Image (tube, helix red, strand yellow):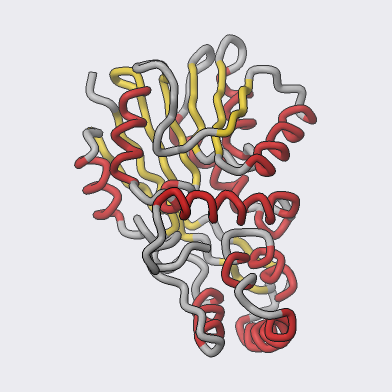
Length: 279
């Protein structure tokens, strides 16, 4: 993952793309099923109509895009964009397995989508906006390609998401001299932040819905699957092979205290922010 040092926006984007190329093959494992759950919830809130056009930004492996493609059919189309070519390969394979022919996937910078103005009826971005170096610029450009009265929905993690598991993870990483800045995926973790950012970019009718999308993991190994196959991997990759092995043993041992008869609770408290482009 990029750090808080003086790194250019383009370097940050390249680092993020490289990271998600690494985790792409394991991104859809059962432990990370919250991505699919949240994709379903986003589209339940959005309610895209048949025959409409939808842009899914930072589409990843296509959790939102494949679901949306079914909802807007017949006659509708979905465009999914991402910087990670490996994630797009997985998304393409997922679409093929589902026999979906109304999805177009392409490598594209989320801050600068190159589509016609006023083209899409809906725009979605699931757990992706907080990776962008310039979120305000991105939203202004998303507004341009959205039709008047078109809808936007984004999902971000609430401030307490993944706690207490992430709290332990961060504390143990600190002992190795590695810190997770709050400016990563905990950007836009408060409703007020989401409302202010979207309003400043020109969106209206902004509403934030907070939902708990969590579930119980069977054991601590499932938590390690999440760490290894998502953005957390960027921090683990900073450890040597020896330190990684010792970190894994110690971290998972500490998490045993959080297990109950139901398993290990995975807190996925999520903010779903909706907005419109003024007609």
